[in-house]
Length: 382
Image 1 (tube, rainbow, N blue to C red):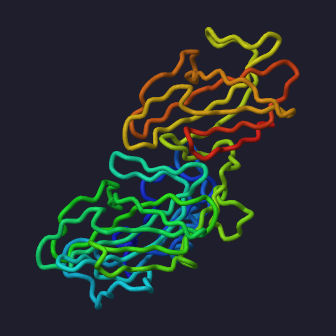
Image 2 (image 1 turned 30 degrees about the horizontal axis):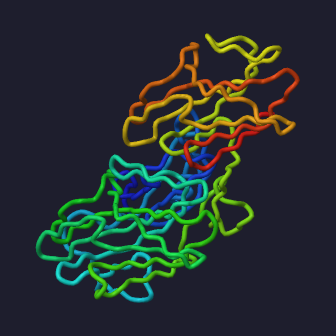
Image 3 (image 1 turned 180 degrees about the vertical axis):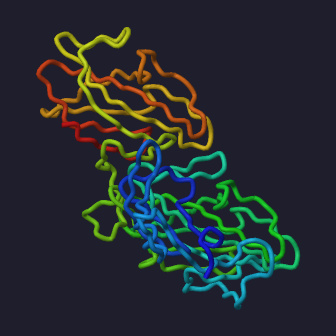
């Protein structure tokens, strides 16, 4: 047994922004769902829960956590994995090496297949899904079993999944490096192994029972996986509670104040609502009415600079009578009445206010927000 600081492999979802309420956590290849709190842009996991997951102990009085874990197999250079790799066939298994290709083969090992609705980073690109979709995140290793260097990139293996309606979906031909989230285009030394990931968008509803992997031309053998019982499901609040399997994503997600949610380029936390009767600079409330103001914390979750202004998100406020109240399509700074139209750097956060007209006698009930064609997040304001 070895100290966790040196040897424990702890992997969170690649390039994904913070989830709310729960998080899918992969520890030495085993995925579990743990409760979390999102606060001030930070994701917090209970120390006692974390210690229990690792088979350790937490002493709150002494503020001390003790955890030990076995060392994972090295992922750098050196000899190829021990054990005879399997040839492609009809019964692909997780965590088994398969020899893909003929003249300059590579070893392919599928580690996990996980559903998510959160954008995934590939270098300078952000891959997203629409409200009618969910993303299948495939995590795998590639190893060079040859005696010479092997150039590796995403188009050297063709991957395809089959959904519950027997419709084929091509997996992205871009791979991401699990450690740095950069696009995989590199030479592997003899015996060297990397962990990578890729994605495919599939319908929001139902399972994806099949994954097909093939190297080179159509004359080479095909590797087929039956993913039933092997898929990591969605977590609340993104999973449709009507589907107990967790394989269906909600198009409209019930959201909580103070929790951060991933849209497309932005991670947005709605902090508070308030009714304000005064004008904001040149923006005056409706006659005999007021403004309904939402304060948001917006973070640029994209791997590049993103431009922010009021029409880059689509909020909608509905009254108790079902009336849609007018959004002013403007975004103001948190402490001044100046309009926001500016770039956000990678990871930069900004607190903003958005305004809705609130006529006299009207009671707001629900606010929804989406960004472009992202999933919709619904807040109860009363």
